[in-house]
Length: 169
Image (tube, rainbow, N blue to C red):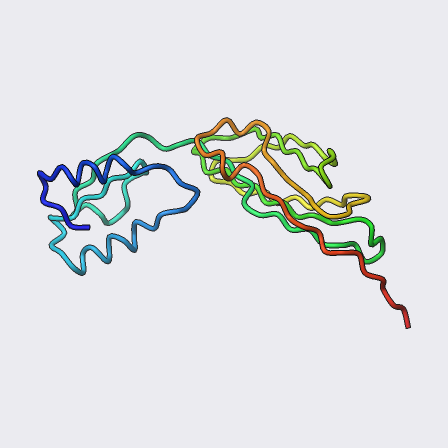
């Protein structure tokens, strides 16, 4: 919304801001703000690094970047040659500016199926493909040592497709 600079409503609105699992697109937000206002009237409140080409707007650092690693994708499919088993693809992302050692636990139908400790480089992404035996319905992947500020993205779960008989002609 629009607020006068001395507005208590502005302070209240800023006070309600919190970290979320979503990403922000400050470049597009700045482009929109510049198209509707004099850039000298635009303020950016962020815990991130300054944006290139944004020296014409005011910038206030709020807090500091939050450490965050996440399970960013999880997919499970049946193995055609062994329909009681599943192949999973897990994507892990490190949103930190530093290397991270991350523990990953995978459960199948509520029972431990795999455990790995992985190194993730700064702003790195790692994709793992693993075959799991005797999976009936569900797979969950979760970080066991994320120790970060955003717990909501530390786990994902999927329903595995039902077994299907493969007809050979």
